[in-house]
Length: 498
Image 1 (cartoon, rainbow, N blue to C red):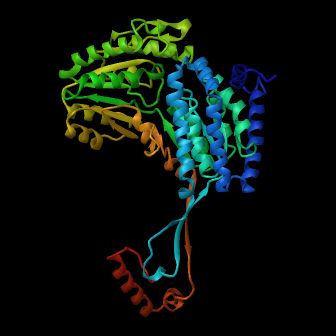
Image 2: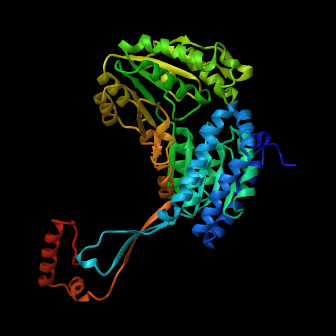
Image 3: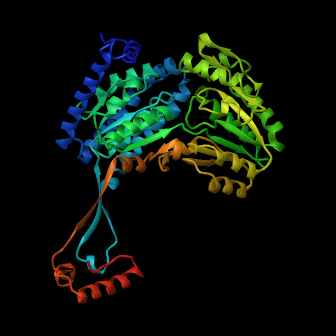
């Protein structure tokens, strides 16, 4: 019988001088990387039919083991079945089916527009797989954040080593158990390394590293990757996601959508609104509407609701509780039960910029409300802070929406709703600045895990023109080339005679 995952993770986090388990994990990763590298070099994952089969197997895994995933996420996060199916399983299936339906088109070489001197040539962009990639998932959405990037990596023809989060141990163990039963055992592997081991694992040299998580761990991964010039995609909760509520908006709808987005998964989301910048004229109405929504969604005692989750571990319970007790004033909720890892859905009012809860990421069901007197004040407030993963704006005034979208910088933007822009296969999702680099979902995942190789397939029959570039250099030839370049600059901006 295998060692329970929780014990294994604890062992991995001990000092390496006291416990050889960390070195054992590193050796296991080295062996998996060696097998995956051999499979990639043999071209095992390259064929379109192979990729299709693997993607179809991934979908089948999610369908056949839906109850197992519901149970695992229930154990890790007390996640309601509804949330697991909708925001984890269906989302991954949509990504996989979208890739299956479009894979042939994505893999086709993309022709580039010809000109006079390339009429007889071919200019192509060919998408080729990067090689063996490392995907590191996060615990807050442990299925989605592992398997959506995996879909893109498979579709692009890569071999993959997947590292789920140690915090969501039951889901990680399930992925570790199921993936070898459904996907090719040489191309795709799951390792159970702890977050403290990631730098050493990245040092093993992958062809790409895809990391989702917090800024501190992402920074260590990026530094390790830089040592071997390994490209990275980072999706980080580096900046707090602001949500502006204008005085001109549908308050009941706004409250419902913000309440769902903030308290879904007990507030443990990288894309939820982290705080509300509410126009002073709308504050009283919004607070009352939020109270009503929380009562409607979770009842008078959310701890008894089957629709409300729990915090992933006691460490996060303590951190979130400390922040909410030292910030603003509790308007709704505030109750804590450490034994149950429960924090009530909480709304804080009278919060100011310097409060502790505004200084760091909060993975818990707490929504701070700050007051602003104008759209200009809201934009200035957002722009002074680190660039967030998401910006949200609620207003019936299209000019307000336009200003928030164009005058703030963020990984993504959504007006009059929250979170949905991060779930769509047709939109790229990723961070900027403190919230990361690179993007994924749909075709963008395929591109992230592909090298776009430029290919020029030339014909030799126009040597009567191209001879001008050869030595010995003559002024006459230079004059002809300069003249040709001046003509081409008016149209395409490069010297066609070459």
